[in-house]
Length: 122
Image 1 (tube, rainbow, N blue to C red):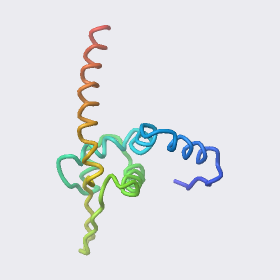
Image 2 (image 1 turned 60 degrees about the horizontal axis):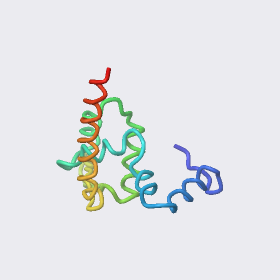
Image 3 (image 1 turned 45 degrees about the vertical axis):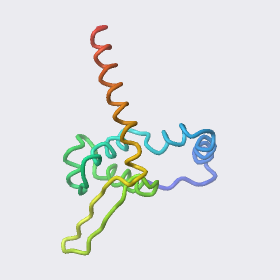
């Protein structure tokens, strides 16, 4: 994905909103279709790229790569590269990423309850 210019409206809005409050800053870090799922899947153990790809249905190699890089840059995951042939790279939650576990557990409980209520309304 191409980098956005610092002077673009999108970049300016992102920076302004990130400084607006902590909630918007946090949502910007974990927002999108795949980031929270990647973090959620890393909750139990360290995983390799191919393992993540297998257990996240529908994610492309490109999207997984981009999101892993962003999550690492934001300090939510750690990437360990081993000097082996073939190269081995593993990902795990950082301390900051682990602090999100109770948040996504609550989101999961809410989501299941809301889904159940919504199905009962139909």
